Image 1 (cartoon, rainbow, N blue to C red):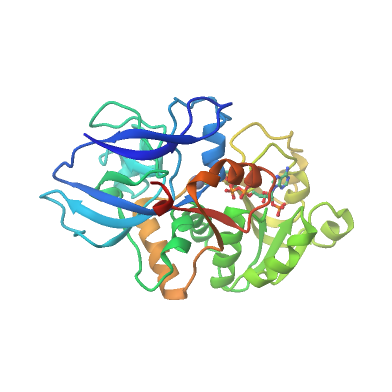
Image 2: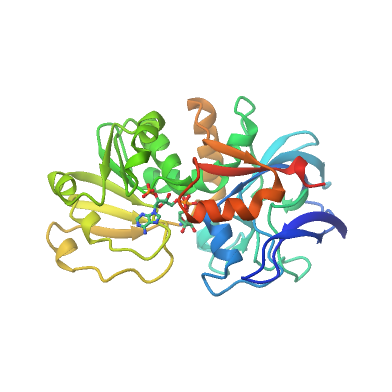
Length: 348
Ligand code: NAP
Ligand code: ZN
């Protein structure tokens, strides 16, 4: 075991503060990574505040990790010291079930191991995330970062990136499709960038009129203010695909009315009961509401390679770790452009 510095919280009421945690000794197929940057996902806040009722404290959040390989175990073949790598929301899975065999480790039938708030298979203890100076992860859950990209702006791709890329990819969004991304936060801004890069006609659907200019700069062809009923009505029945990133309980009915016949809205945000859905909104037009969870490791690597080829990264505000509690507040107030990333050299 090695003791390393981290930021964590002891309860849902407490602020995050500097603590020490243990990382396991390097095993033969492990990669030890010096963490350079870690993104701040809204899920980190949900977990810190125990919004999903499953948090075990001490919690060290962070699942948008990029860094440099420090050392590798004897049987590691893909990485060597000095390589730039990333780790997302998972650090382990059974590798044997049908989901794992289909490269969908996030749906591992035995349960994937979360990067934080999971159970470390080797030590039996809690897993700790990326708000820390280093992490040790089995090779299969490490991805390679394209060298042409700005490393700190790559960090959010490991969760916000894959969570938006995967549904756009899975539902075959293609050139000319009319696609709406709902909610302009960390996930939403990546959704716009990917839909635009896939040459869809991309709409930002937002509650915040003041984000309209930014949305266009990020690649949206047009902006729809969801609180404006008349504006929404003009687009009824016209969208080929909607990606809903809203993080809290809300009314999905106004969005469903935007869909065309036989098209789908994919939920990736709120993992909680929603306002009741009116059956008529999906029965009429044979519409679908679906869900999606991050993406498998193979697809995460594909997404990173796509970003390398198309020069896609996240828009970030770089912060020192001591400012993390303020950053949490700002994310909750929808006041982030568009992802906080922690400069881990500030954790001393
Ligand atoms: P975020 O940065 O806080 O962005 C969410 C955006 O949703 C806000 O900026 C706001 O955009 C909009 N919004 C907020 N409250 C709203 C409301 N009441 N009604 C309508 N729109 C509202 O959050 P994030 O990091 O993108 O994460 C979004 C959600 O996805 C979180 O719940 C997170 O836990 C979840 N998540 C899921 C997965 C997965 O695999 N499924 C992965 C990562 C994260 P506007 O101002 O533009 O309206
Ligand atoms: Zn996340």
